[in-house]
Image 1 (tube, one colour):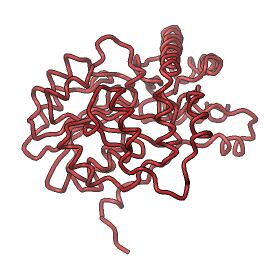
Image 2: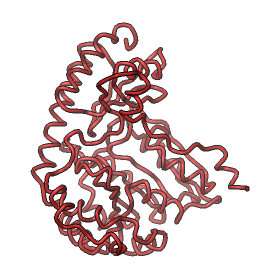
Image 3: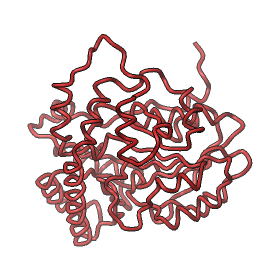
Length: 360
């Protein structure tokens, strides 16, 4: 069997180790997973109530038009229903976009250190990658604009950026959008949108009226705590959404997932509490890092990135893993999901023990 030759250069996505896997491997009683930026507080109680009382018929295909969810999200955001497209998590929407727009004679621009699925699917379509290194952990928008030419079809901005948690502010974004040719699609990945609390974080929905080449991506996986249901969505110009629908798989969001997402939107208090606690716990991490002279980026997500100099991040990852803590390793650092208060305090104590030896 022969597949596209570019597939031979890639590896399938490898999720972090499961808690049960680590328990067995290291013979540990307690495992804390702070690797995948999941909501440590779960989801709204209204979600459980909805999926146990509004049980759909499992023998019937889900609503492929996502009628009720579309109406709910439309009202929630203040946009029209034809501006929305729904997907099985944002991973599927990324795949849809790239499959629909990129080809071997085109290129795509993105940060070098960002969400890897942009790169992964662009390689599958054999498009040219133009990856711009981050500057102080942030998108270098000036250089990204310089990389755009007549063959550029998509520019990706992960905001807040995964894995660094840094962000592009309102004025920076508007200036950048004004430089991008109208035929080039700018995709704003706002998976962590709800967690962003800085006053100059962009208000992007109004920008859709000014820039028809803008697509915003958001998800129910993070602040809403529905990662297991896989519901993401895009917001853009109706003409673009209509074209993308052609590439969407039929019935790509399950009936149960749609029910859960609708219920999640009805509990504003749960999300607000999640955001407030996350911001408070992030400040505790900052104080700890400053005290121990550990380099980090201030984050607008529900995670924080530690810069590691002069030592393998894999070594730090392994040290923590053997003690029952699952985090995410990168070539130049470690990303830690903000957990519950007691989890964060316990992890900080552990980091304090190894900081002078391995992190300084």
